[in-house]
Length: 287
Image (cartoon, rainbow, N blue to C red; front, side):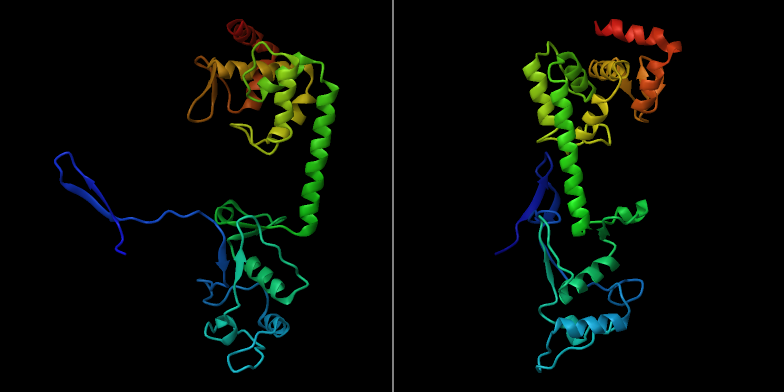
């Protein structure tokens, strides 16, 4: 079947662009992974010495076409039987792939991942330049269990706090507004239900314009002193009404007056007694 072409015509009917149609695909979908050669060393990238790798190759138990056990994998020889073996590939599933380091072949893949800059191991501290290249994350079972435990603890704590203020409609509404949710004429059932979603189904969604997840911001706000929470509530409502705006350089303004380079600075500015007239003016606008 002949490949379709994409043609763009001008108003006069002349073809101004003629290109090949490419079938769209799913980015980073499931794919087979094979060991790759480092462009720096011109050798296969595996995190281990040649001796360590050869020892592991014997445990893996691949056989060549003549039926002999493959007992080495020269890193500088891509034509060696081990590197050409048809089973030397691993399917990386879109929803995660499980490896068991008790199995020799799985240990080999882990060694490959450690030498591949596209893989990040949880606990590693990568510089920003390398962080941009990461496409896959490797998590050990202990780290996975710790993440799950931490997530469960967050959920239990958030739920307990919500129950403890469950009859304080105004405080719940203030927390919601401080999280960027527009709330007018709040009633208890409405605000409680909205917060419940924030700390359950939507708990891992990041609050727009921040680096905090919904549940993290809820836990921080719910523990805030009444005055601090009132300031956060006021800033959120003022931003909704465009009384407080942000320019291209992420500086916040009240009218033409710069009041902070981030929301923390805005809160500090409006909490300062010397700026009480500005705080009053914002409150008056919101009435």
